[in-house]
Length: 279
Image 1 (cartoon, rainbow, N blue to C red):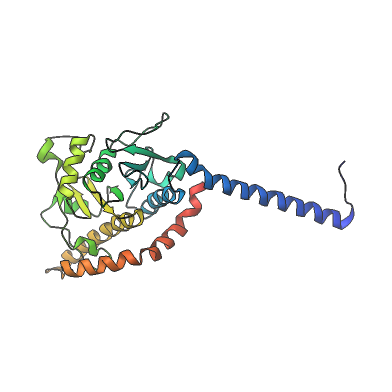
Image 2: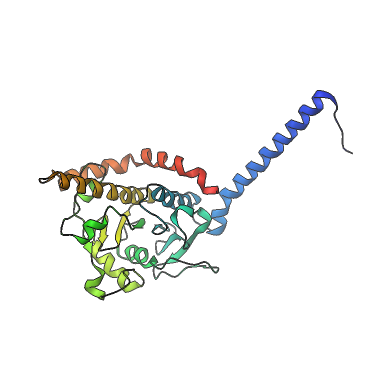
């Protein structure tokens, strides 16, 4: 039996019922969203999937990534696997788009989804560098001039201090001749990983760069500030004279501090892009 309420109280109760129903629906959607990544990738912390999606959107928002480039993370539960979005523009990546790959670049469960051609960048760096927990590949416009000229990229100030230890430049043509410039197989990926060595960033001649770090937050931070540093260095050089760069010692100390306080900037960036994850 349905009970009806008349008068102003009836109207208020009806409105209250609608509010409660809508709230319950929103809570249900929130719980479903929170549970979906775990259901898609059992054993993977949903927060890590969110970091990959948020990092992709942060770099797209800054223009470091456009329709191309990618962010990945090593799977903490299985260090021989890594996590990366299906083939998708970075600004569109959600936690539900993240897939798992082995170190040969094979998807664990493709389910018909397209994958990035250059996943071998990530696979071979994770294979070569056990310390790396995240890899970012960009086609950053700021770094391209330094990848094709004789001017080395150097640390201009404290945020990109991780560059002070040197930035290698990898040239695909050296080992593979004329190519389409893409890291499309394991052999090319291994060559790139060798050029990276123990550094946090490697430039790719006529292509872009790769930044790595001990977390997604750190790798995204480094990808962004590598682009910022390149633009500032070009400006400083244009002013004339030799810029006063950070020393390797200054770089180590500043980078250690940046990694300690990285949540301050990450939480600001996350706040800006998080509302778009459900769109």
